[in-house]
Image (cartoon, rainbow, N blue to C red):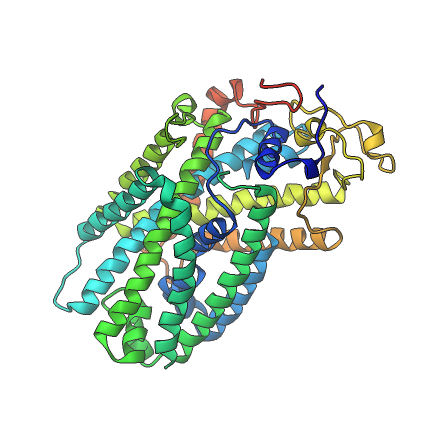
Length: 486
């Protein structure tokens, strides 16, 4: 085995390649994102204050102003606690393969539904703006479908034709995200990342804190400015916040300008969501977890883009949009996979991380680190057991091949407490997400999301039993550090 350089001797690009190699992966996609562009990417996908306005009616009708405030605080804290690769690393050997497969399917389907959800909301927001400006306009379901397609087309264009400009665009969106907040609240009141092991966790926490502060400020401001609540709830735009804007500043033109900011940021979020969803689909296909993985895992050699996965994600979104022409209720039931799929995948990972913490399955690095090749794939099928000298004071059961903490983690007991609270939060939220939104329950108001989620899990199980179990083994090891490519 070749000599291993210590981390301080490596450049940022060399550390990035070594981090991937420690996970058994080769560098395929091009790294274009730095700290600011990744922070913008994270904030754009969260779009907390914008999403809070868009989904304002659900919280207002179910919990009132107090429910909105306390619910936001609880959700914000719950987010701080925070699929298939982690499941493969953290799960016991006896159930590692099936749990990582299940987490992969839940995550991929959740993200596919999330892309369609963002396009649908952007399209209906544009319809609501048209209604506000032109009260004589009669919105049709197929109008929203065409606007849905326009949003998808914009996202595809940025992710393919001008993909090199995406990092710069995300930096601009970050500025626009913050300035847009003040532009609205002031008048109303009056793997493609460099050094990901450090940048990604920091950006996630900063974006949660930043979006949380902005979201809470927007929520308080909007609740303070509510005039006639019945008019806001009965607005023909379909979005109460549009009527609240109009009541707050008394100008249709001014309200339209403020709403346009939210629409633009919504479309920008779709761009980021398409990028994330297509890469996740490509990643799971690379590990042979999806039908047609031989094609979905391809990367275009000239642009280093997973064009087949981008095209697949776009096609799925367009096909889902056709449901809205017949029934928006049916579309919402399908799009509910966003909540159920993602939250269940988070629950799998959080539970396994808690299990590892409580059973001593993750060790703290020693001053003289062992070769990365023995640490990176520990916990996967092709892992090599750590030598006793790597952790002389720890006696692990034979079933463990301990992982090593990276440069960013929350030490126990605080880390274990946060993991436990995250699991409780996810269980409660997922359970109640299957409940009908109103009573009495009618066929038009029934929540069929549990049926949709069950159908996805059932299809994944059948596909696994008939085909995937023959070739899916969890994350595929392509590189072993010090031994070249597999």
